[in-house]
Length: 389
View 1: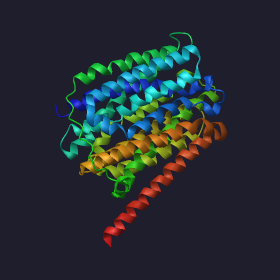
View 2 (view 1 turned 135 degrees about the vertical axis):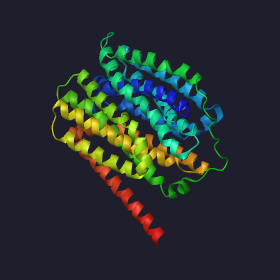
View 3 (view 1 turned 120 degrees about the horizontal axis):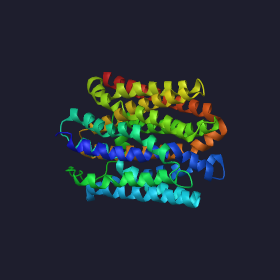
């Protein structure tokens, strides 16, 4: 059972992504209904990503002190509390409480980011690490099918609408607690007393590419993902339609994990991540082609696939660094930058949609990924040029 821990962590990832599916489907719609203006519709998601960003630099020390299993259990408990707080905000009609729930959910999601690193640390061979990460991300495949179904079917469980969806989230997330008891996770390698400067970390040949692939893919995927329910609502589609589109999107995010690890082992992390950038841009082009429901489905599916290739590629680059101190430092820096740009994205999506509308948001996302890809190509060319000289 080489991948036993990875499989159990994949189950935790499944439970996480079921709850995330509810948030992706309805967070913007609830924010739009509660907030004083459309520009603030994604503010609840901002509190979530801001909390995650703030915790990423602290989590390596927390994991080193308390261990993976205990930290994951605490994170899941905070996720349950966050879901119930969101339900309370909906019940009371309080936008402030609903935003405050994002703090607890952000702490849960920040801890869950390390599922893939815990899985990678559980195997010793370098060529097994991308497969272990893939096993974790595979947990999102079933969540992609069941999460949006749970979201759409629980909307009207209680009055007001959406209250039942977040109560269902709390029930789902609490199941992660006993799973952590069956894990035999390795000790997290302690954070060295001497901390490597960020400038040294960024000077490592593949560090910038790894960060750009992880952070850039997450930010631009999130921009399109958060704006799509707002665009669909503007076009007259229902909450169930929005959940269906998010279902396709989540399938795109996680179903390729069945093959991505093997593709990376065969072709390398950088080429696979580069292909992901092309797929993500193509998804934006499809979305620009029309506002019929099938355009939303196919566009969000492709955006999810592009994210999978880029994110897994960037994550694998990090895990393959042999220097332990450098790898741990880069992990925390990568997670911080990823959630920092996600925070900016979450905070500005509502504003961008209000001023640029759906088409403008898509152009911004495609242009950013294109510029990012060109920068990585230039960096690699400069690196090869130095080696040649």
